[in-house]
Image (cartoon, rainbow, N blue to C red; front, side, top):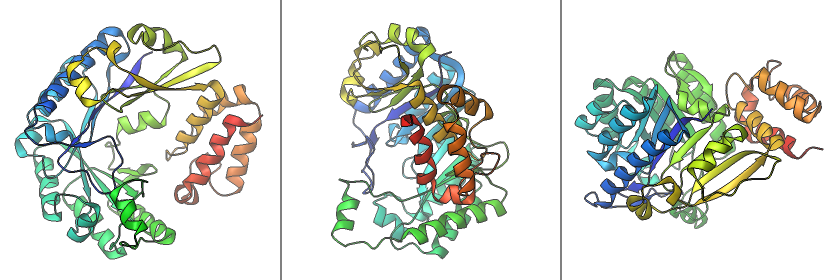
Length: 392
């Protein structure tokens, strides 16, 4: 087996949002670096297929940054990925300020970063679009025939229960088939974190955050959306396969600066053939995670897999299984019976003891699906499953 999910990272933005700590860089719209970078991604996709580390027919996701800032280069990149790897699902992140009708007609599926439909909340976040533009863009993308997802953020300064429900209602009324909801995270070193430290913003407390997430769950269910992952809701038949790949232990390939990849033991040989710059791990290692550290300018001019540099994280079999159990608990169905059986074979009955305690404490059902408590207190649930990595 080789990677069945492909992630392409586009690290360019018109302006970096105040809360963002992703690998993204403010870039003028006319900067030729973007075209060169996109062309480099295309070449690396083709080489990855030829090298056997990427399987055709999987899923693909173009994220950022702001992929739609690439303008005409984005549909060209998407067309190349579809032509060479024929993914069963291909999604592009989009921002309302740069997703045009022509671009919508040339893409496949779009995940639009709306965050909110209220101008005061958007201003706090440092977004460069307003609520009207966000809803126009969603409607335009739906009318163009795209399968559209909207990202919304809760626990924003100035946000109220009423304004949150309005944002939810507005994006659903625009015709989207998928909604991702997540609370604002205060990331150290960002302008937003500095403003909070100075007392410029008052944040909703944990109870408010929980209320917002419960409101999202209730409202979206009333409109026919099913929660299939802790932060993701979809109409029937519209769950994101790429999202599910991350939470179910599927190997994935990331291309682009700061993009991450994950491969398991049985894929090491083909991996090291494609990336001779990597060191072979010792025999107890079962999983490798790689994050590209080559910057955007380097990747725009160096188009070979062997040219890239990486930070590498190595996981033992026990760590890999604990990680898969933890990630599986993000899914509405919980970790699979097959995964639990493999974990038990490797770790012993400490797995059953841990799962039983999580059931007794109300985080999981007897079928190992997360309960409402498990959804709301996910850090506790995930932490106890990850602790299996170090249990003796």
